[in-house]
Amino acid sequence: MTKELWGNICETLRNTIGAGNFANWIEPLEFVEVSDGVAQFVAPTSFYGNYVTQNYADQILYLFRRLDVPAERLSFRIRPTAAAMRPAMSKQAAPTAPTKSAKTKTESAPAARSSYAEDGMLPDSQLDPRYTFDNFVVGKPNELAHAAARRVAEGGPVTFNPLFLYGGVGLGKTHLMHAVAHELRRRDPNLNVVYLSAEQFMYRFISALKDRRMIDFKQMFRSVDVLMVDDVQFIAGKDSTQEEFFHTFNALVESRKQIIISADRAPGEIKDLEDRIKSRLQCGLVVDLHPTDFELRMGILQTKAEMFHSQFPGLEIEDGVLEFLAHRISSNVRVLEGALNRLFAMASLVGKPITLDMTQDCLADLLKSTDRRVTIDEIQRAVAEHFNIRLSDLVGPKRLRAYARPRQVAMWLAKRLTNRSLPEIGRKFGGRDHTTVMHGVRRIDELREADSQLSDELELLRRTLSS
Image (cartoon, rainbow, N blue to C red):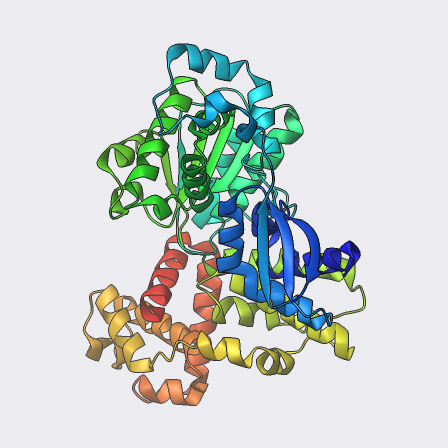
Protein backbone atom coordinates (compact mmCIF):
# COMPACT_ATOMS: atom_id res chain seq x y z
CA MET A 1 0.00 0.00 0.00
CA THR A 2 1.35 3.42 -0.94
CA LYS A 3 1.40 6.54 1.19
CA GLU A 4 -0.86 8.12 -1.43
CA LEU A 5 -3.61 5.67 -0.47
CA TRP A 6 -3.01 6.50 3.19
CA GLY A 7 -3.48 10.14 2.20
CA ASN A 8 -6.89 9.26 0.76
CA ILE A 9 -7.81 7.50 3.99
CA CYS A 10 -6.71 10.59 5.94
CA GLU A 11 -9.03 12.82 3.92
CA THR A 12 -11.95 10.53 4.71
CA LEU A 13 -11.01 10.43 8.40
CA ARG A 14 -10.76 14.22 8.56
CA ASN A 15 -14.36 14.50 7.34
CA THR A 16 -15.55 11.70 9.61
CA ILE A 17 -13.99 12.59 12.97
CA GLY A 18 -13.62 16.35 12.48
CA ALA A 19 -10.65 18.58 11.72
CA GLY A 20 -9.73 19.07 15.38
CA ASN A 21 -9.62 15.39 16.32
CA PHE A 22 -7.82 14.58 13.08
CA ALA A 23 -5.13 17.21 13.71
CA ASN A 24 -4.61 16.12 17.29
CA TRP A 25 -4.56 12.33 16.90
CA ILE A 26 -4.17 11.21 13.28
CA GLU A 27 -1.93 13.84 11.71
CA PRO A 28 0.99 13.21 14.13
CA LEU A 29 1.10 9.55 12.99
CA GLU A 30 3.53 8.45 10.30
CA PHE A 31 2.28 5.60 8.12
CA VAL A 32 4.93 2.93 7.41
CA GLU A 33 3.32 -0.08 5.69
CA VAL A 34 0.76 -2.87 5.88
CA SER A 35 2.39 -6.25 6.33
CA ASP A 36 0.83 -9.60 7.24
CA GLY A 37 -2.46 -7.92 8.12
CA VAL A 38 -0.83 -5.33 10.40
CA ALA A 39 -0.97 -1.61 9.60
CA GLN A 40 2.24 -0.17 11.03
CA PHE A 41 2.71 3.42 12.16
CA VAL A 42 5.23 5.60 13.97
CA ALA A 43 3.65 7.61 16.82
CA PRO A 44 5.05 10.49 18.91
CA THR A 45 4.42 8.61 22.18
CA SER A 46 2.93 5.30 23.27
CA PHE A 47 -0.02 7.26 24.64
CA TYR A 48 -0.88 8.38 21.10
CA GLY A 49 -0.83 4.79 19.87
CA ASN A 50 -3.03 3.59 22.73
CA TYR A 51 -5.52 6.41 22.25
CA VAL A 52 -5.81 5.88 18.49
CA THR A 53 -6.21 2.12 18.98
CA GLN A 54 -9.02 2.60 21.49
CA ASN A 55 -10.90 5.34 19.65
CA TYR A 56 -10.20 5.17 15.91
CA ALA A 57 -8.91 1.67 15.10
CA ASP A 58 -12.24 0.36 13.81
CA GLN A 59 -12.69 3.30 11.42
CA ILE A 60 -9.10 3.09 10.14
CA LEU A 61 -9.28 -0.67 9.57
CA TYR A 62 -12.62 -0.33 7.79
CA LEU A 63 -11.13 2.24 5.40
CA PHE A 64 -8.15 -0.03 4.73
CA ARG A 65 -10.42 -2.94 3.88
CA ARG A 66 -12.57 -0.73 1.66
CA LEU A 67 -9.43 -0.17 -0.44
CA ASP A 68 -8.86 -3.95 -0.53
CA VAL A 69 -5.93 -3.69 1.88
CA PRO A 70 -6.09 -6.70 4.28
CA ALA A 71 -5.44 -4.90 7.57
CA GLU A 72 -6.68 -6.60 10.74
CA ARG A 73 -4.98 -4.56 13.45
CA LEU A 74 -2.83 -1.50 14.09
CA SER A 75 0.72 -1.47 15.39
CA PHE A 76 2.73 1.52 16.64
CA ARG A 77 6.38 2.06 17.32
CA ILE A 78 7.49 5.16 19.18
CA ARG A 79 9.39 7.91 17.43
CA PRO A 80 12.75 8.66 19.11
CA THR A 81 12.43 12.00 20.86
CA ALA A 82 14.78 14.70 21.98
CA ALA A 83 13.59 14.04 25.53
CA ALA A 84 14.80 10.45 25.35
CA MET A 85 18.28 11.73 24.52
CA ARG A 86 18.41 14.08 27.52
CA PRO A 87 19.35 11.89 30.53
CA ALA A 88 19.05 14.71 33.05
CA MET A 89 15.49 15.49 32.02
CA SER A 90 14.44 11.84 31.83
CA LYS A 91 15.06 11.58 35.58
CA GLN A 92 12.26 14.07 36.19
CA ALA A 93 9.81 11.79 37.98
CA ALA A 94 6.89 13.92 39.08
CA PRO A 95 5.38 17.37 38.61
CA THR A 96 7.07 20.03 40.66
CA ALA A 97 6.20 23.66 41.09
CA PRO A 98 8.36 25.81 38.81
CA THR A 99 10.93 27.94 40.53
CA LYS A 100 11.17 31.64 39.90
CA SER A 101 14.22 31.10 37.72
CA ALA A 102 12.38 28.40 35.75
CA LYS A 103 9.51 30.79 35.10
CA THR A 104 11.90 33.43 33.84
CA LYS A 105 13.53 30.87 31.58
CA THR A 106 10.12 29.80 30.22
CA GLU A 107 9.24 33.29 29.10
CA SER A 108 12.48 33.61 27.12
CA ALA A 109 13.10 30.04 25.99
CA PRO A 110 11.62 29.43 22.53
CA ALA A 111 14.03 26.54 22.05
CA ALA A 112 12.32 24.54 24.80
CA ARG A 113 8.90 25.15 23.26
CA SER A 114 10.17 24.19 19.82
CA SER A 115 11.58 20.93 21.14
CA TYR A 116 8.28 20.14 22.79
CA ALA A 117 6.41 20.74 19.55
CA GLU A 118 8.77 18.49 17.61
CA ASP A 119 8.04 15.70 20.09
CA GLY A 120 4.35 15.92 19.25
CA MET A 121 3.21 17.35 22.59
CA LEU A 122 2.39 20.93 21.62
CA PRO A 123 -1.35 21.42 21.07
CA ASP A 124 -1.89 22.00 17.39
CA SER A 125 -4.65 24.57 18.00
CA GLN A 126 -6.31 23.55 14.76
CA LEU A 127 -9.07 26.08 14.19
CA ASP A 128 -12.13 25.62 12.04
CA PRO A 129 -11.99 28.21 9.23
CA ARG A 130 -15.80 28.39 9.23
CA TYR A 131 -15.94 29.72 12.79
CA THR A 132 -15.31 33.44 12.46
CA PHE A 133 -17.05 36.58 13.67
CA ASP A 134 -18.19 37.30 10.12
CA ASN A 135 -20.50 34.29 10.03
CA PHE A 136 -21.60 34.34 13.69
CA VAL A 137 -25.25 35.39 13.77
CA VAL A 138 -25.94 37.70 16.72
CA GLY A 139 -29.29 37.80 18.52
CA LYS A 140 -30.61 38.57 21.96
CA PRO A 141 -29.65 35.14 23.43
CA ASN A 142 -25.95 35.54 22.55
CA GLU A 143 -25.31 39.28 22.17
CA LEU A 144 -23.45 39.67 25.49
CA ALA A 145 -21.22 36.66 24.81
CA HIS A 146 -20.49 38.00 21.33
CA ALA A 147 -19.62 41.47 22.67
CA ALA A 148 -17.29 40.04 25.32
CA ALA A 149 -15.56 37.77 22.81
CA ARG A 150 -15.14 40.71 20.42
CA ARG A 151 -13.57 42.75 23.21
CA VAL A 152 -11.00 40.03 23.93
CA ALA A 153 -10.30 39.59 20.22
CA GLU A 154 -9.32 43.24 19.90
CA GLY A 155 -6.15 42.42 21.84
CA GLY A 156 -4.59 44.37 24.67
CA PRO A 157 -5.58 44.26 28.34
CA VAL A 158 -9.19 43.66 29.33
CA THR A 159 -10.93 44.23 32.64
CA PHE A 160 -12.08 40.61 32.93
CA ASN A 161 -9.93 37.51 33.08
CA PRO A 162 -10.96 34.80 32.52
CA LEU A 163 -13.86 35.06 30.10
CA PHE A 164 -16.13 32.14 30.95
CA LEU A 165 -18.76 31.13 28.37
CA TYR A 166 -21.38 28.55 29.23
CA GLY A 167 -24.53 27.12 27.70
CA GLY A 168 -26.02 24.02 26.15
CA VAL A 169 -24.83 22.07 23.12
CA GLY A 170 -24.84 23.89 19.80
CA LEU A 171 -25.35 27.44 21.11
CA GLY A 172 -22.09 28.92 19.79
CA LYS A 173 -19.47 28.61 22.54
CA THR A 174 -16.90 26.84 20.38
CA HIS A 175 -17.69 29.11 17.41
CA LEU A 176 -16.91 32.20 19.51
CA MET A 177 -13.67 30.74 20.86
CA HIS A 178 -12.44 29.88 17.36
CA ALA A 179 -13.49 33.34 16.16
CA VAL A 180 -11.45 35.01 18.92
CA ALA A 181 -8.39 32.94 18.01
CA HIS A 182 -8.75 33.75 14.30
CA GLU A 183 -9.06 37.48 15.00
CA LEU A 184 -6.14 37.56 17.46
CA ARG A 185 -3.88 35.78 14.99
CA ARG A 186 -5.00 38.08 12.18
CA ARG A 187 -4.06 41.12 14.25
CA ASP A 188 -0.77 39.65 15.48
CA PRO A 189 0.52 36.50 13.70
CA ASN A 190 3.29 36.14 16.31
CA LEU A 191 0.82 35.85 19.19
CA ASN A 192 1.00 32.45 20.91
CA VAL A 193 -2.67 31.42 21.00
CA VAL A 194 -3.47 27.88 22.16
CA TYR A 195 -6.96 26.38 21.83
CA LEU A 196 -7.72 22.87 23.05
CA SER A 197 -10.42 20.92 24.83
CA ALA A 198 -10.16 20.08 28.52
CA GLU A 199 -9.97 16.44 27.44
CA GLN A 200 -6.88 17.17 25.33
CA PHE A 201 -5.34 19.11 28.24
CA MET A 202 -5.81 16.05 30.44
CA TYR A 203 -4.40 13.62 27.86
CA ARG A 204 -1.30 15.76 27.37
CA PHE A 205 -0.87 16.10 31.12
CA ILE A 206 -1.08 12.32 31.60
CA SER A 207 1.32 11.74 28.72
CA ALA A 208 3.79 14.23 30.18
CA LEU A 209 3.63 12.48 33.55
CA LYS A 210 4.11 9.09 31.95
CA ASP A 211 7.05 10.25 29.82
CA ARG A 212 8.56 12.27 32.69
CA ARG A 213 8.34 15.52 30.80
CA MET A 214 6.43 17.72 33.20
CA ILE A 215 8.95 20.56 32.93
CA ASP A 216 8.34 20.72 29.18
CA PHE A 217 4.59 20.57 29.77
CA LYS A 218 4.66 23.42 32.27
CA GLN A 219 6.96 25.55 30.14
CA MET A 220 4.76 25.18 27.09
CA PHE A 221 1.43 25.97 28.73
CA ARG A 222 2.78 28.82 30.82
CA SER A 223 4.43 30.56 27.90
CA VAL A 224 1.22 31.12 25.92
CA ASP A 225 -0.27 34.57 25.38
CA VAL A 226 -3.86 33.37 25.21
CA LEU A 227 -5.11 30.01 26.50
CA MET A 228 -8.53 28.71 25.47
CA VAL A 229 -9.92 25.57 27.11
CA ASP A 230 -13.20 24.16 25.81
CA ASP A 231 -15.60 22.01 27.88
CA VAL A 232 -13.79 22.48 31.18
CA GLN A 233 -16.42 20.34 32.94
CA PHE A 234 -14.51 17.35 31.58
CA ILE A 235 -11.77 17.67 34.21
CA ALA A 236 -14.25 17.66 37.11
CA GLY A 237 -13.45 14.79 39.47
CA LYS A 238 -9.98 14.25 37.99
CA ASP A 239 -7.85 15.42 40.90
CA SER A 240 -4.36 15.46 39.37
CA THR A 241 -5.51 17.23 36.22
CA GLN A 242 -7.41 19.80 38.27
CA GLU A 243 -4.29 20.42 40.34
CA GLU A 244 -2.20 21.17 37.25
CA PHE A 245 -4.97 23.23 35.65
CA PHE A 246 -5.23 25.32 38.82
CA HIS A 247 -1.49 26.12 38.83
CA THR A 248 -1.48 26.82 35.08
CA PHE A 249 -4.44 29.14 35.50
CA ASN A 250 -2.80 31.06 38.33
CA ALA A 251 0.52 31.39 36.51
CA LEU A 252 -1.14 32.84 33.42
CA VAL A 253 -3.33 35.28 35.34
CA GLU A 254 -0.30 36.51 37.30
CA SER A 255 1.50 37.03 33.99
CA ARG A 256 -1.50 39.04 32.70
CA LYS A 257 -2.19 36.48 29.97
CA GLN A 258 -5.75 36.10 28.75
CA ILE A 259 -7.76 32.93 29.48
CA ILE A 260 -11.04 31.90 27.85
CA ILE A 261 -12.96 28.94 29.23
CA SER A 262 -16.17 27.26 28.12
CA ALA A 263 -18.46 24.75 29.81
CA ASP A 264 -21.98 23.39 29.59
CA ARG A 265 -23.00 25.09 32.83
CA ALA A 266 -21.97 27.88 35.20
CA PRO A 267 -18.79 27.34 37.30
CA GLY A 268 -20.72 26.94 40.54
CA GLU A 269 -22.93 24.24 39.01
CA ILE A 270 -20.15 21.93 37.78
CA LYS A 271 -20.23 18.91 40.06
CA ASP A 272 -16.90 17.61 41.42
CA LEU A 273 -14.98 20.70 40.28
CA GLU A 274 -12.71 21.89 43.08
CA ASP A 275 -13.98 24.94 44.96
CA ARG A 276 -10.74 26.85 44.41
CA ILE A 277 -11.09 26.40 40.64
CA LYS A 278 -14.74 27.46 40.75
CA SER A 279 -13.67 30.56 42.66
CA ARG A 280 -10.99 31.44 40.08
CA LEU A 281 -13.39 30.93 37.17
CA GLN A 282 -15.99 33.18 38.80
CA CYS A 283 -13.48 36.02 39.23
CA GLY A 284 -13.77 37.04 35.59
CA LEU A 285 -16.77 37.62 33.35
CA VAL A 286 -19.23 34.71 33.34
CA VAL A 287 -21.61 34.82 30.36
CA ASP A 288 -24.58 32.56 29.65
CA LEU A 289 -25.44 31.75 26.02
CA HIS A 290 -29.20 31.35 26.23
CA PRO A 291 -31.21 28.94 24.10
CA THR A 292 -31.92 30.38 20.68
CA ASP A 293 -35.18 32.19 20.02
CA PHE A 294 -37.14 32.06 16.78
CA GLU A 295 -35.58 35.25 15.38
CA LEU A 296 -32.04 34.04 15.96
CA ARG A 297 -32.77 30.66 14.38
CA MET A 298 -34.25 32.43 11.37
CA GLY A 299 -31.15 34.63 11.11
CA ILE A 300 -28.90 31.58 11.21
CA LEU A 301 -30.93 29.80 8.54
CA GLN A 302 -31.02 32.86 6.28
CA THR A 303 -27.25 33.33 6.58
CA LYS A 304 -26.66 29.65 5.82
CA ALA A 305 -29.11 29.71 2.90
CA GLU A 306 -27.34 32.72 1.36
CA MET A 307 -24.06 30.84 1.54
CA PHE A 308 -25.61 27.85 -0.21
CA HIS A 309 -27.16 30.07 -2.87
CA SER A 310 -23.66 31.24 -3.81
CA GLN A 311 -22.66 27.58 -4.30
CA PHE A 312 -25.91 26.49 -6.01
CA PRO A 313 -27.23 29.63 -7.70
CA GLY A 314 -30.00 27.72 -9.49
CA LEU A 315 -31.64 26.25 -6.37
CA GLU A 316 -34.78 27.83 -4.97
CA ILE A 317 -36.35 27.61 -1.52
CA GLU A 318 -40.12 27.80 -1.24
CA ASP A 319 -41.51 30.49 1.04
CA GLY A 320 -42.19 29.13 4.50
CA VAL A 321 -39.50 26.42 4.56
CA LEU A 322 -37.05 28.38 6.73
CA GLU A 323 -39.85 29.41 9.10
CA PHE A 324 -40.94 25.77 9.35
CA LEU A 325 -37.40 24.67 10.25
CA ALA A 326 -36.94 27.51 12.77
CA HIS A 327 -40.13 26.47 14.56
CA ARG A 328 -39.63 22.72 14.47
CA ILE A 329 -35.89 22.45 15.28
CA SER A 330 -35.25 24.63 18.29
CA SER A 331 -32.89 22.85 20.65
CA ASN A 332 -29.58 22.79 18.78
CA VAL A 333 -28.09 25.09 16.15
CA ARG A 334 -25.88 22.31 14.79
CA VAL A 335 -28.92 20.13 14.14
CA LEU A 336 -30.65 23.11 12.53
CA GLU A 337 -27.73 23.80 10.19
CA GLY A 338 -27.37 20.09 9.46
CA ALA A 339 -31.02 19.93 8.41
CA LEU A 340 -30.49 22.76 5.91
CA ASN A 341 -27.31 21.09 4.65
CA ARG A 342 -29.27 17.92 4.00
CA LEU A 343 -32.02 19.79 2.15
CA PHE A 344 -29.60 21.56 -0.18
CA ALA A 345 -27.73 18.33 -0.84
CA MET A 346 -30.98 16.56 -1.73
CA ALA A 347 -32.21 19.42 -3.91
CA SER A 348 -28.92 19.65 -5.80
CA LEU A 349 -28.97 15.91 -6.49
CA VAL A 350 -32.53 15.73 -7.78
CA GLY A 351 -32.46 19.15 -9.43
CA LYS A 352 -35.68 20.37 -7.80
CA PRO A 353 -36.53 23.38 -5.61
CA ILE A 354 -36.75 22.95 -1.84
CA THR A 355 -40.44 22.78 -1.00
CA LEU A 356 -42.24 22.17 2.26
CA ASP A 357 -43.22 18.68 1.07
CA MET A 358 -39.58 17.86 0.23
CA THR A 359 -38.52 19.21 3.61
CA GLN A 360 -40.95 16.98 5.48
CA ASP A 361 -39.97 13.93 3.43
CA CYS A 362 -36.21 14.52 3.54
CA LEU A 363 -36.15 15.33 7.26
CA ALA A 364 -38.82 12.85 8.39
CA ASP A 365 -36.47 11.08 10.83
CA LEU A 366 -35.13 14.34 12.26
CA LEU A 367 -38.56 15.93 12.61
CA LYS A 368 -39.86 12.80 14.30
CA SER A 369 -37.06 12.91 16.87
CA THR A 370 -37.72 16.59 17.59
CA ASP A 371 -41.51 16.28 17.51
CA ARG A 372 -42.85 18.01 20.58
CA ARG A 373 -46.12 16.03 20.82
CA VAL A 374 -47.61 18.93 22.76
CA THR A 375 -51.38 18.90 23.23
CA ILE A 376 -53.71 21.90 23.14
CA ASP A 377 -54.77 21.08 26.71
CA GLU A 378 -51.15 21.37 27.87
CA ILE A 379 -50.78 24.68 26.06
CA GLN A 380 -53.94 26.08 27.65
CA ARG A 381 -52.86 25.06 31.15
CA ALA A 382 -49.36 26.53 30.67
CA VAL A 383 -50.70 29.83 29.32
CA ALA A 384 -53.33 30.17 32.06
CA GLU A 385 -50.67 29.56 34.70
CA HIS A 386 -48.22 31.98 33.04
CA PHE A 387 -50.75 34.83 32.89
CA ASN A 388 -52.27 33.91 36.26
CA ILE A 389 -55.84 33.48 35.01
CA ARG A 390 -58.33 30.65 35.35
CA LEU A 391 -58.47 28.05 32.61
CA SER A 392 -62.22 28.56 32.34
CA ASP A 393 -61.69 32.26 31.56
CA LEU A 394 -59.04 31.44 28.95
CA VAL A 395 -61.42 29.26 26.92
CA GLY A 396 -64.63 31.03 27.96
CA PRO A 397 -66.67 33.72 26.17
CA LYS A 398 -65.35 36.78 28.04
CA ARG A 399 -63.60 39.30 25.77
CA LEU A 400 -61.80 41.35 28.41
CA ARG A 401 -58.22 42.22 27.39
CA ALA A 402 -56.91 40.32 30.45
CA TYR A 403 -58.34 37.13 28.89
CA ALA A 404 -58.34 37.91 25.16
CA ARG A 405 -54.58 38.40 24.81
CA PRO A 406 -53.60 35.19 26.69
CA ARG A 407 -56.24 33.39 24.61
CA GLN A 408 -54.59 34.62 21.39
CA VAL A 409 -51.19 33.57 22.74
CA ALA A 410 -52.53 30.07 23.43
CA MET A 411 -54.01 29.90 19.92
CA TRP A 412 -50.69 31.02 18.42
CA LEU A 413 -48.81 28.33 20.35
CA ALA A 414 -51.38 25.69 19.37
CA LYS A 415 -50.90 26.61 15.72
CA ARG A 416 -47.09 26.49 16.04
CA LEU A 417 -46.61 23.48 18.30
CA THR A 418 -49.32 21.06 17.19
CA ASN A 419 -50.54 19.60 13.93
CA ARG A 420 -54.16 20.50 14.70
CA SER A 421 -56.17 22.35 12.06
CA LEU A 422 -57.64 25.80 12.69
CA PRO A 423 -61.18 24.42 13.15
CA GLU A 424 -59.90 21.84 15.66
CA ILE A 425 -58.08 24.56 17.59
CA GLY A 426 -61.22 26.73 17.55
CA ARG A 427 -63.32 23.91 19.00
CA LYS A 428 -60.84 23.55 21.91
CA PHE A 429 -61.31 27.26 22.67
CA GLY A 430 -64.99 27.21 23.46
CA GLY A 431 -66.18 26.32 19.98
CA ARG A 432 -64.79 29.40 18.25
CA ASP A 433 -64.74 29.73 14.49
CA HIS A 434 -61.52 29.03 12.58
CA THR A 435 -61.43 32.65 11.39
CA THR A 436 -61.23 33.76 15.02
CA VAL A 437 -58.19 31.51 15.50
CA MET A 438 -56.65 32.84 12.29
CA HIS A 439 -57.15 36.43 13.47
CA GLY A 440 -55.62 35.64 16.88
CA VAL A 441 -52.55 33.99 15.34
CA ARG A 442 -52.05 36.87 12.91
CA ARG A 443 -52.42 39.42 15.71
CA ILE A 444 -49.75 37.76 17.85
CA ASP A 445 -47.43 37.60 14.82
CA GLU A 446 -47.83 41.36 14.41
CA LEU A 447 -47.37 42.18 18.09
CA ARG A 448 -44.28 40.03 18.66
CA GLU A 449 -42.41 42.00 16.01
CA ALA A 450 -42.84 45.23 17.97
CA ASP A 451 -43.13 43.98 21.57
CA SER A 452 -39.91 42.38 22.82
CA GLN A 453 -41.51 41.45 26.15
CA LEU A 454 -44.24 39.48 24.38
CA SER A 455 -41.63 37.83 22.18
CA ASP A 456 -39.70 36.75 25.28
CA GLU A 457 -42.87 35.38 26.88
CA LEU A 458 -43.70 33.37 23.77
CA GLU A 459 -40.20 31.89 23.67
CA LEU A 460 -40.35 31.05 27.40
CA LEU A 461 -43.69 29.29 26.97
CA ARG A 462 -42.48 27.44 23.91
CA ARG A 463 -39.37 26.17 25.73
CA THR A 464 -41.41 25.19 28.77
CA LEU A 465 -43.85 23.21 26.66
CA SER A 466 -41.08 21.60 24.60
CA SER A 467 -39.04 20.41 27.59
